[in-house]
Image (cartoon, rainbow, N blue to C red; front, top):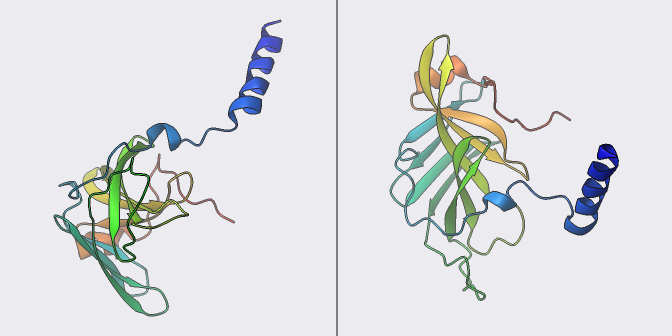
Length: 176
């Protein structure tokens, strides 16, 4: 009898509520005016081929210097946005950021101002352990379930030493 009730409740939940996106319960109610202090730093990622990707977060500005077939540089600035507004002005070069708590981690989600699809990019900093040492790690993530795709570190030396290390308890992009 107990199994029947649980089965009916699960079926009813799927029928009437659909599958709940885990982010929907953690969706931000406001936009950030400035980046969190923990992010404000220059972060390095070693790609294993002698190149260092770099992301620098300031008070409102950020700069990405990445290699993907060629070097790309992107400079951005976050703007405050009323998330409850029904009309949004057109600013193709603007971005905004929202706070998200998911996978036991605080993330900053950066979107394009007029972005109509996608989840944006997520950045979060957490202290991780590596051979008994505490290391500040900035994770870069994306996708529907906030999958981590790379880690950045506070110095080039640590970035080269740790490279593409996978840490326990982190949700990474599924291997195809």
